[in-house]
Image: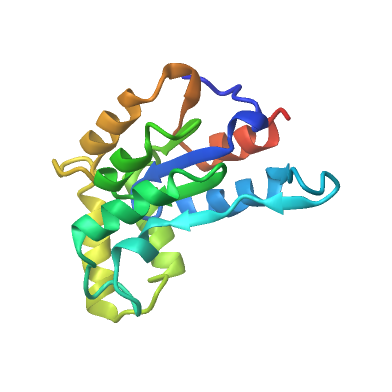
Length: 185
């Protein structure tokens, strides 16, 4: 496991993990820390854009209706062609569309109970009722048992496609914090 990827190698970063693992939080932290100079105005600093795969996969207004799968995949492939981005989500089938363009892959393999606690604490991120929250908790609780592309086994398949020098797996909030604190420019 590589924990010494320099900040300069994180210009196209995939972040994957279970629901409630901290993907969105980490993406925002990286975006804030990893500012890139533009070619036109070297003194200007830009944040890396954060691409939330939930916003691409679901119709506006929440998690009620998924968009057309082929259109979603095409949009992710197009976004992955950009020079810099941080893409985060649970969808292994969408990570497959961007992994070959990624310069780094971060897998948040946080214990399921911690993910469930985080979901309970934050609630649903884009609205929804108690039934939707209960369904998310059930789904996240089955992360290691499911056999879909958005499960532990699906994420492992994506992880193994990325060269070892470009991939990181973090298992706790402490490891995430230590890794962020140790970023080398």
